[in-house]
Length: 104
Image (cartoon, rainbow, N blue to C red; front, side, top):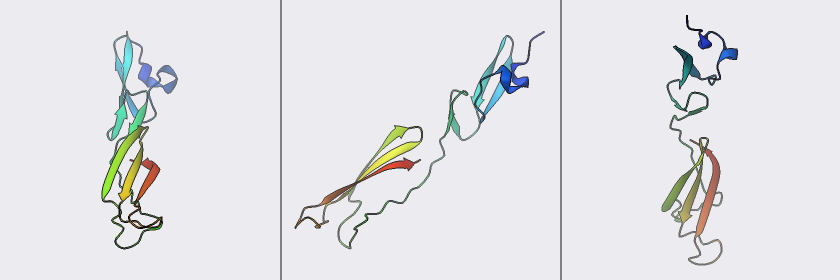
């Protein structure tokens, strides 16, 4: 008779947001819906929206003219946003804004 490792958490190392499935001679962990991972580590993969704004934004700065977003792992991201007409440092100086620690 097979022992059910899924009967209690002390018998398996599945993530708290994973489902344990007993198998002959062992068990398998699967992340619940909306999560990604190997069942022992599960992270939220639900798309999120984060509004970013220039702290010194002015009409005509063209904030958002160019945008680059990169995943930093573990659900974190960094966004780089261009504002070519921002002239706080002189005529046609432009600015780049970096937003880190974004969730999503």
